Amino acid sequence: MSDHDPHNVPFADPIDGRSGLTRRAWLARAAGAGVGLAGHGPLTAFAQGAPRRGGTLRVATVDKPVNMDPGYAQLYSSLQIYQNVYNKLAYVDEAGQFIPGLARSWKQENEKTWLFDLVDNAVFHNGEPFTAQDVVFTFTRLLDAKNKLPMRIFFSPVEGVEAVGSHQVRFHLARPFGPLLAMLTQATEIVNEKALKEKDPKLFPIGTGPYRFVEWVKDDHVTLERWDKYFRPGRPYLDRIIFSAPADDTVRLTGLQTGRFNWIQTVPPQRILELERGRDPKASPGRPYLPFFLMLNASKPPFNDRRLRQAIAWTLDRAEIVKLVYFGSHVPTAEPTPEPSPWATGVNVHKGGPDLARARQLLSDAGAGGGLTLTYLVKSQVPVLVKTGEILREQLKKVGITLEVQPLESGQYFEALVGKKFDIAGAWWSVTVDPDMFYSPLQHSASPWNFSGFKSEEADKRIDAFRFTPSPVTRKKMYPDLVRWFQEEGSLIVFSNEIQRYWMKPNVHGSVPLSSLELRFEDSWIA
Image (tube, rainbow, N blue to C red):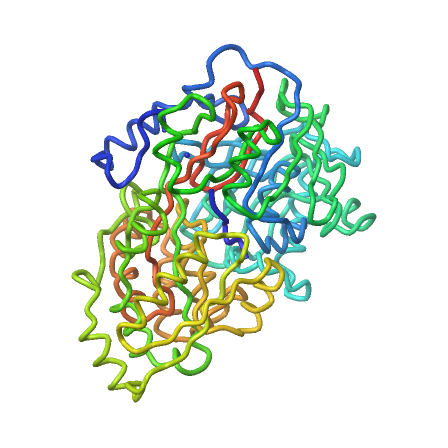
């Protein structure tokens, strides 16, 4: 699951629900914060002085990787690492614009074909030169149903990719596909056929990226080293990156303060305001890029009944959860893309909630007035979601529901999701490049990532209409109704959107949150 895992200020100016920034002001600020370089990657406003080559970035992320094959993209903790080993055709920058990756330019020839011109100086870490055939192989592998790669769902409208020349490819679509470029910036990384045949890509990733894979010591660390044949001249700056994943926010912060780490993904939410006032550590810009939500298992009772799902929605107190668990580091919201996202709708069919009387009536109508006992599945490595479950437990008590919180290790959590062995699960997802990335994988009947087991012909029709409309203007007009329908009928309840901040030593530069939620370290450097 891309559970695009958590965890951003010009320094003393975090962008959050209290900032008062309008969408236009935020976008103007974001657009001015970075200047695109040749290839991809922003120059950040706070990275002062000339970038310096060398050094080791010791990174502490939230969770441990489980699979290094980008065809699977199982957990964000895996993507965080291998996205520095591989390259995509295109990327999204800090201002939300599509920028070149392995594709140096592109054009839409008609509604069903796109032409991409590729760079001619990229080399895979096994010494193989990058060509159009690697793009063809990557997507042929991905689209082949026999391979059962879950990332296939993102590219279902793609019929095939042909090599037009040694460094040019054409994408052929079965039908117009509105979010194609957005999908390419989110997934998938380009792989090499020879590399995949020689070594298991789940364990030994080989790409064209700025860093090459060195070692993976399970449950301890992953080491990457600079790829000296990287196609962007002068990049990357760092000699190596060492990824670790302490299971606790406090441990990560202590590690940063003592020098064990020099970059960490999250800190305890209650420490954010205090830390922002200091100089060590420093924080990156803050961006609300990560929706947190509840998955209700609609594949079996009780949540195969819409009334039970709505009862939970009317009981939920988002403001209380954000106040008690996230200490203002989240924005309470009922939609996956709230302000200042250009996709923000402001739609909330449960506005005015919680409404406990309405929730009790829904439970009674569904024959569950006598009380329910439910399980809440959560990753133990994410203490804020464990705490969310504890607050949710107290909220549900008010309508006679007993909630048992079950923290599990990442692998067990993922297995339980796939096996539908839960009632409610706490989760998060990267959606802010294009909201189709939220609804298609998580609510479409045909999706392998529909962990909640929600099946609805009407839902599929609505998702497909949004996905297969080529006009950005038309899609924007369609989107509010999509949000409203899923709030009323779907099996996901969005309760907040996390403001991304990365924390680092004062001498670490060039790390900013992106709407793709990639940890892209090729432009990072240590003074």
